[in-house]
Structure formats: C-alpha cells, structure tokens
Length: 176
Ligand code: S3P
Image (cartoon, rainbow, N blue to C red; front, side, top):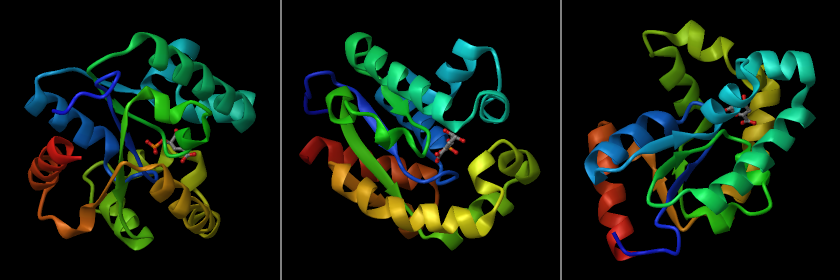
C-alpha cells in the first residue's frame, strides 16, 4: 500500500452499505487490524447505538463521533477503520487516513439489508433507518458529501461479492 501519513484506510458510506463487513475482509487481506467507530462509541458509553440515540439524543452521539475522530487521528496508524454513516460530519476526517467511499443506490442498500439472514436486527439497530422516506432524504443529502470527501469511490453494486470488492480496493489503493 502506498504510504499516507497515518497508513489508515477509512471506509465511509451510507448505513447498511457493508462498511464493517468489508473492513474486516480488508484487514484480513492486508494483515492488519480493523476498528469500527460505532463499536468504539458503544464501548465508551456501555450502550448500544440505538439506546444512545434514545436516551441521550443524536446531538450527543455526534459529539462522541467527533471525540472518536480526534482520538483516531492522534493514536491510530496502519489500520482499517469502518465508520458510521454520519461520521463524515467530523471536522478532521481527512486527517485520519485515506478515504474510501462505498457507493450504492438506496434500493441496493435496502435490498442488501432485507436479504441478510439477520435483517430484522440489522434494521432495528439503526435509528435513522426506521422511517424509509426520511432515510432516503438523508441518503440524497449525503451522496455528494461522501463523493467530495473520498479519495477512492467504489460502486459496490458492480461487484459479485465482497471478495471482489476487496480485491478492487486493494488494487486501487496501490495506484491512488
Ligand atoms: C448513522 C449510521 C450508523 C450509526 C448511527 C448513525 C448515520 O452506522 O452510526 O445509527 O447517521 O448514518 P452504520 O452506517 O454502520 O449503519
């Protein structure tokens, strides 16, 4: 992999696009570790994301994301980092690592969740995906933001499976 300052790869994209799954696969292939911003926040608060939203509210959750972003920038190197769909609002995103945007259509994302064996669980844990109409508006609003922040954009719907997406990402990070 071409060296960036931190050596980190940061996966961004809408809820349910497959960031965590791909981060694990990439970490395995690149023989490094993967971190997940939502998991870090759940550990910090000792609560599930859904409960943080319910009890403390979204604004509080966004503050935690910013805290995590600063911690990642200062302390994490040569890792794969999977982010929550709204993590792109943190002020120092570009300083954390090379940014890979996993792009998909809204329908593709919904289909991916619905086809998952644990689809109910996948949906229930995401407060901002409960109302499909609102989620689609959020999707439209964020599309350009993801694109502008990305060093590499991968249209995940073009590939057969996650192995192929992983292969493509590894190819691209070596040339970008
Ligand atoms: C959010 C995405 C979620 C999680 C939280 C908010 C968002 O992560 O961080 O529910 O604002 O898009 P995933 O992208 O892993 O679903």
